Amino acid sequence: ATSSRHPLSIVTMAPLRSFDAFAKPIDGIRERTISGGLITLVASVTAAILFLSELLVYLQVQTRHSMHLAESVPSALFDQSPSALLLSGHKIPLRVHVTFPHLPCNSLDYAHDGNSHSEGKFQHYHRAPFEFKKRIPTIEEYKTSLSPSLPPNPKTDRQQGCTLIGTIQIPRVGGTLSVTVSPTAWRRATSLLSFGVDLLDGPPEPDPFHGKLPNVTHHIHSLTFGPPFPPGIDPLRNAQHVMDNGSGVALANIAVKLVPTSYVSQNPFSSEVETYQASVARHIVQPETLAAQRSTLLPGLMVTYDFTPLAVRHRERREDFLVFLSSLMGIVGGVFVTVGMVTGCLVNSAQAVAKKMD
Image (tube, rainbow, N blue to C red; front, side, top):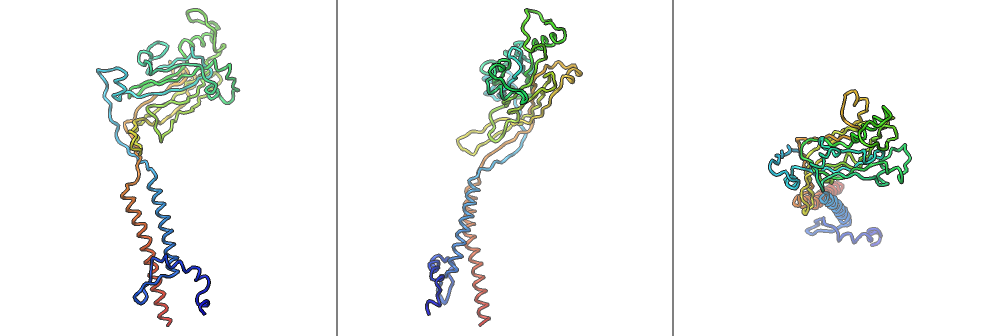
């Protein structure tokens, strides 16, 4: 008779009574039931899942963005030394790494704000260790800078190319950086192509372009302003400008808008990083356009940059610990209170139905 009243399944699940957190009052005492134990386990699992999800949300680092007017930087009128300008924040680093696979280093020139290296003015304003250097490209640089349609022969052909790499300090005002064919190499190439002879003064030199105009195809490995910005990317990294117009002569014109940016990491041991994000617009100016405008610009690369009056601030932070703690208390307490209310309603409803049936 006892076994008929208590099936095997009920006997097996009897230990669940010890888990019942919602004891039912019966005649002055509270009774632990199997259904109450099941409800308690479901509530505990639900509370644990919600607890883990809330913990994961708390551990995630959120980046908050804000925008404000950039602070103006006064000019350094009295102390113009590079170290003083750098420490006072009047100058920022400009890093350049670009390869011209078809332009020898003796035919490559560069300038900043019109102060060219070939005229000796660049060295006057930018001194070691903040300077650019020209060298023969490495095999990897040469392969990367070639047009996909040209088969690479890096062991010999890379000697006819040039890589410009280095860092200079520039003032926090708009300016222009150009990496082009040198004026001497351009005049020699055009005179040989037009008249068949070198019209320049001095001893004749071998023609590195073999009776053709210089091909200024180039690859920008990187071109950055200011310190690295962890969440951001370099829009000019691995930028390829292939001059496929037949002559290889053109001017890659890049306009850069620099947005002053401050980045505060969540790490308490790291300091605030002051840098710049770049917005880039670029196009290729064909030689016909340069000739029609009577432009004095030489073929190659020209980067024009300017600074925006608005600044952006990125700040990493976690949710406040007290908010996290109050959320946990609300989750744990709310789950059991809600389940208790639902259970009480169901039990009372069942009892009311049973009384009416009796």
